[in-house]
Image (cartoon, rainbow, N blue to C red; front, top):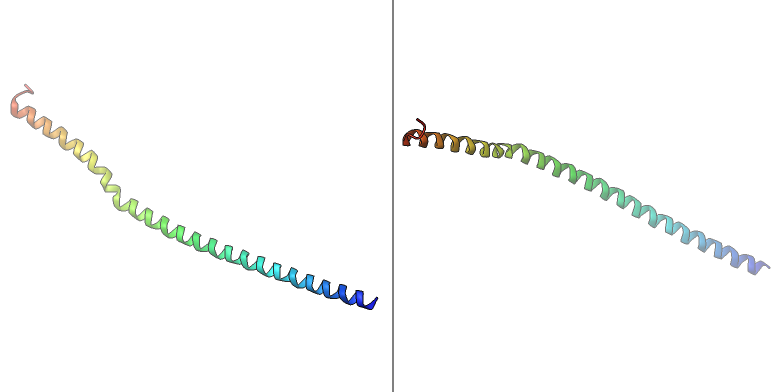
Length: 87
């Protein structure tokens, strides 16, 4: 009986060892995923800040269309006055 008990004890020890190894691997993977997630969040915040700055810097470009519309209206009015079509 002692031999069977020793074999069972060795099997249990090996089982616990494998179990502990699985837990260590799982914990390592989890910590790696958490670290990568935090890194991605940091990069996303940097990208958002850059996009916000870009939007702020290019807002004036949207006014170009309105300015063009006003210039076209003025040009048409001047052309009408010059050709005498307004009176």
